[in-house]
Amino acid sequence: MGLFDFLKVKKNTASIAKDRLRIIIAQERNTRGAPDYLPLLQRELLEVIRKYVNVDVEAVKVDVTKEGEHDVLDISVSLPDRASAA
Image 1: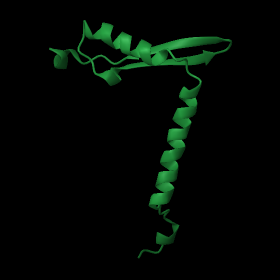
Image 2 (image 1 turned 90 degrees about the horizontal axis):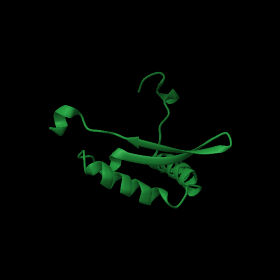
Image 3 (image 1 turned 45 degrees about the horizontal axis):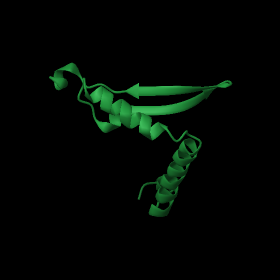
Image 4 (image 1 turned 90 degrees about the vertical axis):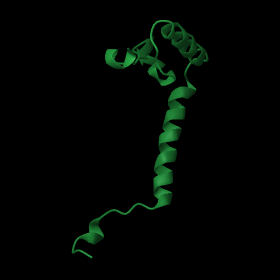
């Protein structure tokens, strides 16, 4: 046992689970106000993109953000590298 071991923060499994639950709750709060059409829009965009590029399901993200008075549709597509796509 070192001289400063008592200063180290030791996390037990309960506190780790509590932190994870906080993250999950925060994510749920963010998606709770989201429009109902977003999952369908995401699936349809994925289908269209897959006609031209082989992408994973997680490659397409669709979110609605608020900028002032306006809602902004934010669409993000992670395309594979050209070397791995060939």
